[in-house]
Length: 184
Image (tube, rainbow, N blue to C red; front, side, top):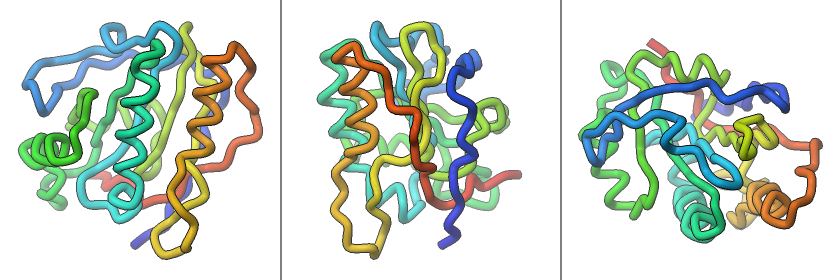
């Protein structure tokens, strides 16, 4: 299990537009249609990474909690499916249903979106404000598989709560750590 950190895209970076297929509905979805009233949260994940499997319940729960407050969520998998067939669109659809995703799970076949966002690992989390400027990137919390720290989502929850409360998001942020994106 490789331990790859986030690249930590510069705060204030404008979100790159994209249009990708939602593996659950089969429809193409673009960033503009996903934009949240308060903020837009993008999870780069995959189906097999132990770091994602360790946090997936919390990632889904956070989306369920904050969806009612004008936050939108989307998950994207950019992994090479030739060498990692467990991350295929068909398996993404199964994974989304199994984990009760209430948000789209998009397939980045060309890996262009991951490159545009400088995503490096799974999970890699990005939060963009209502103007689609980056205000948070990095980890969910300090928990990692095997480290004994419970999964709480405290870092991401704090950022989202600050946005909800009209406060600035703390610029001191820790990179996520996970499996590297499986590049072609």
